[in-house]
Image 1 (cartoon, protein in one colour):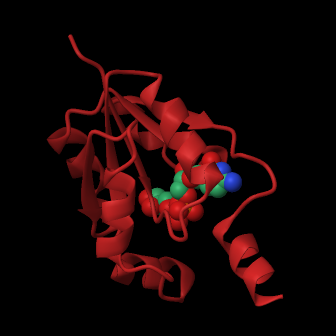
Image 2 (cartoon, rainbow, N blue to C red):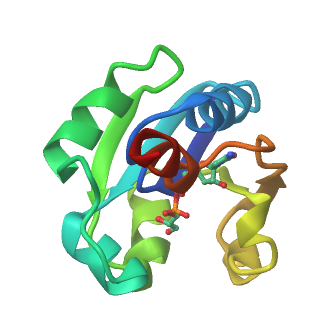
Length: 130
Ligand code: C2G
């Protein structure tokens, strides 16, 4: 039986940290599905609009060779239904989310992978600004 992996994120100003979590997530199974935070969800979480629109972020992530499908994550509360819809066997998140998704362990396995050090969208934006 194929193993389905699912992960979520904004993936704004796509960088190596994003690429590496997708690569490592894909290695854990056969199919990788990625929920991309909508612009509205991002605004509600972080109080600002992403640099790239949800359509642009979806198109970029969908083109990554480790990714088999993308969809929009409209709200954090719908996570359980996304996990069921995509028949997820494993939910992968970066360890900045450690512990936050443990309650989904009744639906699927939950794995937190270490973040790639020293890179973030915020830092890239800061570097360009300077
Ligand atoms: N990431 C990483 N290394 C970095 C930066 C990010 O491994 N240096 C991972 C994060 O841990 C996350 C994924 O890349 O798993 C996407 O990162 P973000 O776009 O920052 O995602 P976020 O806004 O935290 O959205 O429902 C959960 C949210 O949608 C997660």
